[in-house]
Image (tube, rainbow, N blue to C red; front, side, top):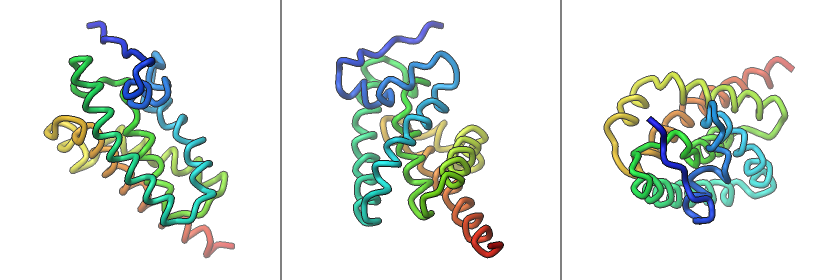
Length: 160
């Protein structure tokens, strides 16, 4: 089955499809997470409260953008909708200090939990509808990934 293509001239399509990164022919979620890295770099210059506020606002906007794009395209969770990956990566990275190693580890951990979908991520992915459903499973994956990353970063600091 051929999936409908978004109209990236429409702002909510452009955002839901991660600035176009979700149109990658393979692994759109991975490309969406790659697109999150420059956003993360921009956010690292902010105080923690501003970083978290913008991440929460990005989640709320994502519920709207992703839900609207999915309805218009007629596909609940179109694989190219990757704003959830962008917000998930931002949340994964929220409680660890910036470093190149943290960027890479956060990327790998978030992708792992987003792909493997341990409980309750898979259940949320399959049972929660609309824009909130598109976003929430990635938020839980981010909490898992961020928790592991936070724990690892503490262990690494102890080894120095």
